[in-house]
Image (tube, rainbow, N blue to C red; front, side, top):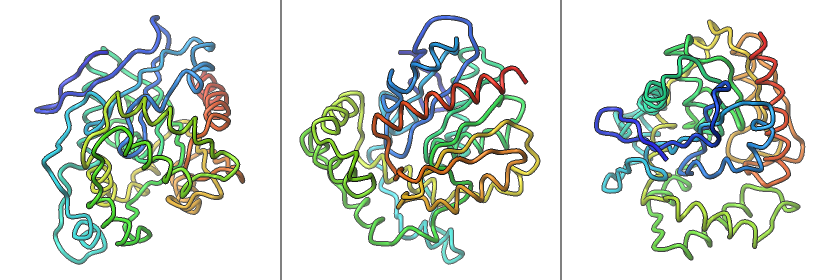
Length: 293
């Protein structure tokens, strides 16, 4: 485990294997630590000679957490929709600069990026700001603009009120999230509980998911800027995704020249082992092709 610094924020990251192969930076979803990218996902990357670097985004894992900051999510949503001046504690561009700090700490000029949900939004923002640093994009559950128009206020109220006192409470939360956002065929309570415990022990922080949602609600519309990119891009999305409609992924595909989208009819907003395995294999092929280009 190592750390990079962006101003007052310390970002924890891990090179998952030794070597000098091409770097693949892994960015997890809202409120989730880097442990979501496990060996099950990374095995095809290891086999192809790539060096995965998984990052704890701010407010997750061992990175800086703003636990005393409670964002007003309804106000931020209203502002994103043009009514009000609600601001998030930090923005997607700040999170992108955190990633650049890791790259600079590791002396990485260019890297391949894998981003899941908000992690993919951060990767796109970095590509817009610094296209010379991005060799390819792999976006899982993709969006390229604010979700303020599709997230109900009730969901935001629940996030703001959420209080997770201990590991057992977090396990219960994740079981509920899996039931709400995943596919019934993938619901394995024992597996979900075990993965929740791993995440909790690595670092789940009070209000972290809400602050990530605040950043995504206030996200800029990147679509016009993405049109100037010439970065090999793969998008993996689920037809059954109840959080990010597949139309948002289609928008992202349309915005990035040459992007490829693959819609899985059996995928929700979740990452069970069967999907992590298929994602890893498909992304390894995409990165290998981009690396040769």
